[in-house]
Length: 163
Image (tube, rainbow, N blue to C red; front, side):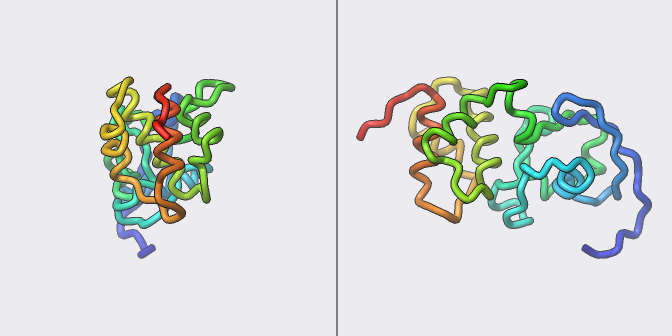
């Protein structure tokens, strides 16, 4: 990381439902602040270029790649990370399905895949298999051919997979 030319600034936001005051350089990546300042290490860095989806978070309800978001853009924003998806002591249905059906593999892509699936189900509670594939399209997995991930999302939707 090159030496910043500006001063750190105070950034007010909401992270996983809790008010947060962060100190960051205006062009510092949200990904780095989440991981380094807040210790929210569930959000992963895969490519650092916005191509893989591993760093996905919600900002004001929209899924974004946090490696592309400078801190100057999150003042007053509501941010939800993978750590904020579960409801108290109960995993989100997508998280539970990833565990039960083997969608969580090496773990690098899992947070982004889960958030993409959560986003899809919030917009479309009864997606078709094509909708699921489209909803996951911005996320890359380096482990497999995506079948376990796809099956996990299908099961989270309450659908059965034709064998």
